[in-house]
Length: 354
Image 1: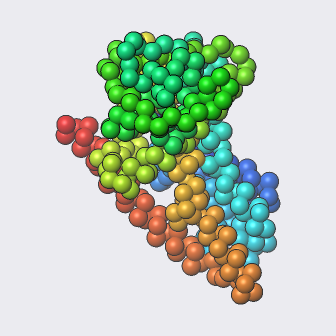
Image 2 (image 1 turned 90 degrees about the vertical axis):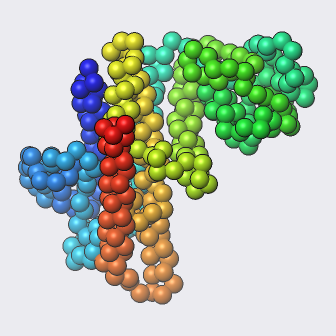
Image 3 (image 1 turned 45 degrees about the vertical axis):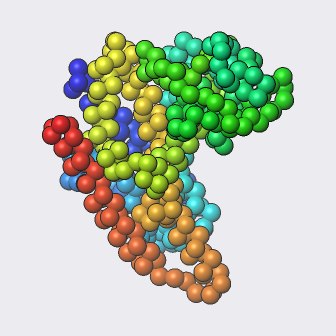
């Protein structure tokens, strides 16, 4: 059964790569930019076919993929080169990969919420354990909808325990919707009572279950995806503050291991597949956000370089040689691949070294 989930993970990774590169490919073709190669995965080709100006390939190393456009990393006399396209077209092409990943994550989550989830959890307090110090006008009351915790928006019910767990002093600043009015509550004493059978921390109150409707399904789907975006930001912040480190990061090998473990520990194969799809919805959103970070070699870095280059050329009225930007992206790509190799070896060691 573990092999099944490993193969499922590789398949889903391939889908995420495919839709990302298809975003670049489709918008490039639509913009009249010449695409020299559209490839899934890296390394030597297992299969390839030339159709018109584009080589389509399936390669043997199941990591990454690419949409190679004419003049993408250097100057070209070809009028259909990427560098000769109008700037707004290039911006759309660069952003399209992340947009497709986000759309994929949104679609997976919409399907899960629509067809697989029995309930839609809400954020309104329905019950408070007796004799809790926060159960007053300055704290929580039954009927309060929890909107903000310690400056972070509560998108979904799961955010409540996640955000409360991040702060250890036991006092929290909340914004709640009470009787149609937003109230700010300061230093509310919310401390963990216990961990329930699902591994969720309990803080002395319960929240509601929303009635299923088209509106609630769409709302929850969007909020869940926004929560995934926020989790990426929080994770990056934890890396910079030292709250998390390299030991907490995972590459493709580590993710496949987590997916296989989550799948095999599920009660049935059907539930296992649903859990895996939920995880890959998060991974799709994660890829969308990470690819838009302003780091050279990533789409976000290319967008920043494109805007800076356009501004400099506008001021100096001189065209910059694109090969220098190509060197910058190539250098950072080497660094990213080296970093990925370190994370991969760490994942392998954790799996087989204990």
